[in-house]
Length: 86
Image 1 (tube, one colour):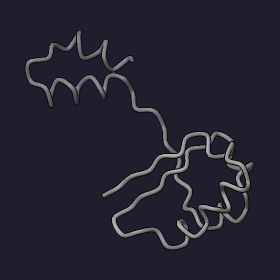
Image 2: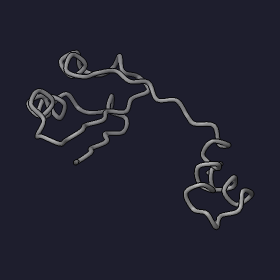
Image 3: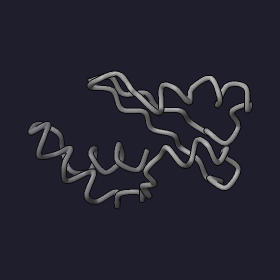
């Protein structure tokens, strides 16, 4: 899979956004394009009409720390909590 993340997508110039329309309509197989925006109302309507809206929420740092300890067995909980807070 190829994953493309466009941060602050609302800041795309209309010229750039229009250039991507064909890609949004018919993305290559095994491709995921994620547009991140804190102001989706500023995106071009032609872009929004081709997207599925998902809302991402931050994970609690305790959950991240727990996963880190589980994934990297030698990691101490205190160190994992420090990393998770970052």
